[in-house]
Amino acid sequence: QSVLTQPPSVSGAPGQRVTISCSGRSSNIGPYDVHWYQQIPGTAPKLLIYGNTNRPSGVPDRFSGSKSGTSASLAITGLQAEDEADYYCQSYDSSLSGSVFGGGTKLTVL
Amino acid sequence: EVQLVESGGGLVQPGGSLRLSCAASGFTFSSYAMSWVRQAPGKGLDWVSTISVGGGRKYYADSVKGRFTISTDNSKNTLYLQMNSLRVEDTALYYCANGLGVAGPFDYWGRGTLVTVSS
Picture 1 (spheres, each protein chain N blue to C red):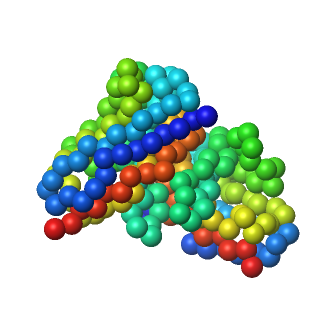
Picture 2 (picture 1 turned 45 degrees about the vertical axis):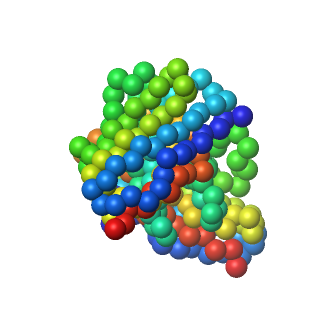
């Protein structure tokens, strides 16, 4: 059972928009930043969004992040086949004094 | 180009020990916090440990506290994870990553080294 809660799977057709939610609590997402990672099967995770809303250089603007209260979301617009991957949210938890990840969401492009 | 290359994984019996290494290049190693994150086969990401810039603070997941020790050698640009009293549930692909600190983000990741704990 992960500290941050994500849906196990989401899907969408090419060109559509999908969102992935990440739910936490007052000891983690509430006061701390949320970061998102993309993991294509068989490869290492890659930083996708940092500080709730910021994209590292090279990440397409089709990817966007938001945070409200104790929840965060990742939105992907204009879905492409190459977006098929696992997506993880991550934050800090003050009650655990450590970093925490969501359980991951598998995105399927139909 | 940032490169992180993990090594030291392998098959070990329950109760045994292993030391993982992560060789870093392409960035100023001493200016970054370094972390270990693991992924059990078919499972999600699981944060293990972080060492702060300068090495003054070390953070551990409860599941490894007292058994694992994180350290760095800035002269060799290398991160280590000493793993003792290994358990079957420690079986995973272990990634190293750099970043700002324990709260993340974890900017760049290596390809991982596989640790298998089995009798």
